[in-house]
Amino acid sequence: MEKKISTNYKKSDLDKFEKIITNKKTDLYKEEYNIKEAIESSKQEYKHLINSQTATDIRLYFFQTGTLKTKMKYIKMNQSNEDFEIPVPWFLIRHPKGDVVIDGGNAKEVSEDKHAHWGNVVAAYDPVMGKTENCIDQLNSIGINPSSIRYVLHSHLHLDHSGGVGRFPNATHVVQQKEYDYAFNPDWFAKPAYIRADFDKPGINWKFLRDKNDDYYDLYGDGSIIIIFTPGHAPGHQSFLVRLSNSGYVLLTIDAAYTMDHWNDLTLPGLVCSAVDTVNSVKKLKKLAKEKNALVVTGHDPHAWEDFKKAPMFYYD
Ligand SMILES: [Zn+2]
Image 1 (tube, helix red, strand yellow):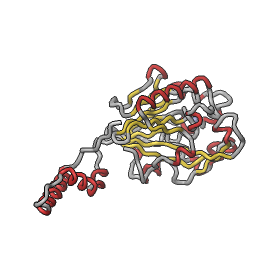
Image 2: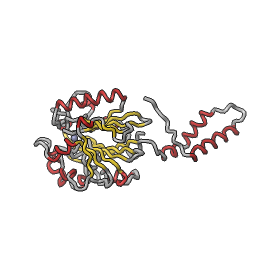
Image 3: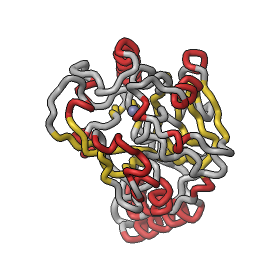
Image 4: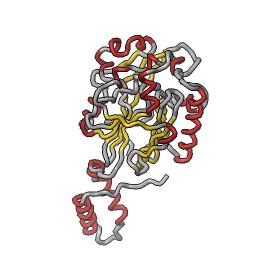
């Protein structure tokens, strides 16, 4: 993977580099001056300036709206009844053409009254979510105003992914038509996973993608955010390939692979609408991850999730 160093310095930064170099030239006039070294050290010294102005950079932030206390068998099909606690991730991509939220985790209302908002589902998936662990407060915590979000990309509309619907007044919400339709009329076994109040809201600007016809949809036309149709766990599930100039490719499988066991063909997720599609979607993503040498981020693996850098302290760029 080619690693590029950001070269978008402000004129004022370049002037500072120049000053350092000039001073060092004077100090070290008797020695041969190593210009490369001086540039490197000045870059280090002004790292905070470089990081704070990123007009053309793309950044990926990892967030979570708390966790779900559940049972192993609900995450790994036919496995044990032992307790298992999973993270509820969501993501922000800062892009020069407009900021993008992926999913948004649990709805804010879950932190206020989980029983009122989720009903009986709480018995199987018990949310642990603080009052400010919702996507709006979390964006505010890193200085981002909800009105600046241009797109919300929906992997699918299950209850732990639908927290971003209708929270961003200027956003277009991108979802698979199949997923949207199914969410309003799910089969009996999938019904508890869809909370209609989360997505049946007035005034939402939806953009519908049409499964294979729109596969590998390039959001900004620059190859930085690609939407991949990955049905199986839900009929209109989609995953995301993000290209970052320093970190390389990051593949957000979301629930197309719940855990690394699922990614490695050792288990199916506890909830599937088509086992065959679920398996084929992993196959499809594995091929892509290999081609792009991508960092793979699965949907709800508590152990793998520990190792990723989380907002606001860290980010991928
Ligand atoms: Zn799901």
